[in-house]
Every structure is written in C-alpha cells, then in structure tokens.
Image (cartoon, rainbow, N blue to C red; front, side, top):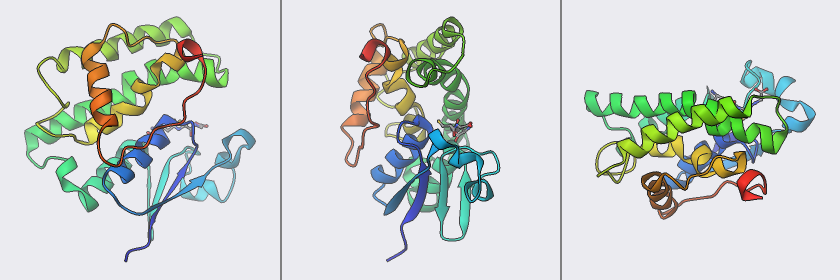
Length: 206
Ligand SMILES: N[C@@H](CCC(=O)N[C@@H](CS)C(=O)NCC(=O)O)C(=O)O
C-alpha cells in the first residue's frame, strides 16, 4: 500500500480545493496538512523550503514535491489517473486552454472577487467582475451542446475550473445567467468522490 500523498492547503483556498477534489475523485489516499496562512506560516520555514513562492497548495508524493495547483493536477493525472488527461495532442491542448483559463481569467475574476468579500483584499471589485464575466461567458458558450469541457468524460479541465466558479457568488458574482455553467457544476458535484469546499456566508451567498 503506497503512503498517502500529502496536500499542504488552506481550507478556504479554491486552488487548494481543486487538488483535494481531484485526489478524492480519483480515489488515492491523501493527507491534508493545514497551513496557517493567517499567521504567515506560508512565508516562513519549513513551508518555504517546500514552495519558495510561499503559496498553497503544495503536493508531496514521497520525495517528489509539486507546487502550483494545475501542475499538481497534471502530475496526479499522469501518475495515477491517466483517463483524466487525454493523451491525444489535440485534446491535451484543449485541456491546457482551460488550465490557462483557471490560472488567468478565473483567478483574476471570481477568485479575486472572493478575496475582496471573504478576506478583505484591497482589489478593484468592478475589474474583478468584468474579468469574471469574460471567463463565465467563455465557459457558457463552450458548454453549449457539451456535458464536459473536453471530450465525453470529465477531465482535469473540469476540476480546475470548479472551485472558484462554484463559489463565485461569495464574491458577488452571480451565476444566474449561466445555465450551462451551473449544469457543469452540478454534474461535477454528482461525481463519485466529490468533496465540497467549505462555503462562506459572503457576497451573494451571505
Ligand atoms: N498559481 C498558484 C496560485 C496559488 C495561490 O494563489 N494560493 C493562495 C491561496 S488561494 C496563496 O497561497 N496565497 C498566499 C500568498 O500568495 O501570499 C496555484 O495555482 O497553486
């Protein structure tokens, strides 16, 4: 029996949640290690030796350390669950487009908007909302006549966009106008092994 992978995380971090969610969906053993972001544990040793960028999540798999949530999804899929990252060049490129969306417009849109309402970050709410609208419109349009973002089954693309999209209302970003996006979120929530991110009563979810 292999040792569980270790996920260093912060419970209210969507970047952390996407890693926990994926580990749970693919049924590998994992251990969650809470990093005390409120008291700066991520900017001090021993955490900085794991990730000099001082950010969660970090994955430890034996002696292997992987930082960055999307890089962790790629690693876990390649190593433990290849069906979640198609090998064909075209489909892998399609998955990468959504990993970029997750690291770009979703991080700077709904995730950033939630940083304002949940953590009091000094960011421009209008700007976050405008970027969130770009991300949500792109997803909504892409999901017309599609059940999953890439191909005929869930992939790490769906996992990467899930957490911050599902929790967008906490940042005052409504999902009302995006029925295809809401249907995708529900489909993900019905997958075997789904684990939620803790909800915060903030924004439209207050
Ligand atoms: N690109 C990184 C972003 C990770 C990230 O922004 N983590 C946040 C929590 S959601 C963090 O650790 N913030 C603390 C900081 O940057 O000081 C990833 O995908 O893992």
